[in-house]
Image (tube, rainbow, N blue to C red; front, side):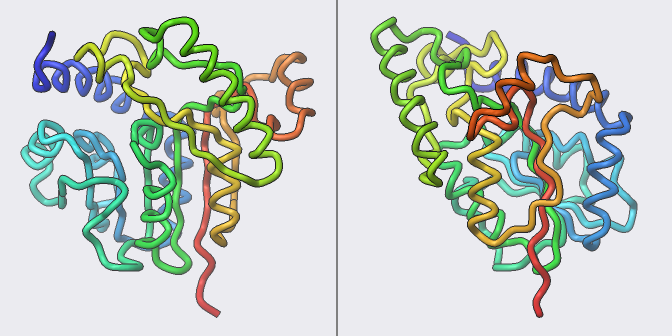
Length: 260
């Protein structure tokens, strides 16, 4: 079994490689362009080692939060002019309406309480501020992540039944935010495949609905940023209620309405 430090070193090496290469793409520049319309105080939830910092406007003040001691220590070492805090996503140590812009990339799916984390994002965002949430999308109720590949067949079948129930309830605006415990990494101490450490069976439709219920203005809810044509089968699946974003990852751009 690997230690937490060994696992974090391996995990963040992979994440840094992917994130650093992504910030030169047009889709990532679109994210920054959207966020810069709000102001200069930026917050990143699940910041990891903060690979985004070199690509931010120099006038911005950046604050990053992560639960990993390893990630926070590396980020502080690399970017001493930014602020980094180790904290839980479901209880952020910031006052209401503290930030102009909020970003979270491939973090929400790893939180134990995603509903509370989204509530905290809304709480600390200033009126008129903008946010971007990026992650995978497991809208399809029969899909299961690598995080439960160590579960036995009956338990995986039961989870699929729960997911179908969650899907039906979601169509009627009842949001369950289904999480799985223990995931593969928690059980084995290893991270070997993507999403081995996933907790929340993330749904772009569920997240978008929740933000809408909390009064957020959804500017863009798209998933894939590749610009590739969507296959016919996926287009047909999207006719089904609650699956209109099926087949793409989650990219949600939203704004907290300004004060009247």
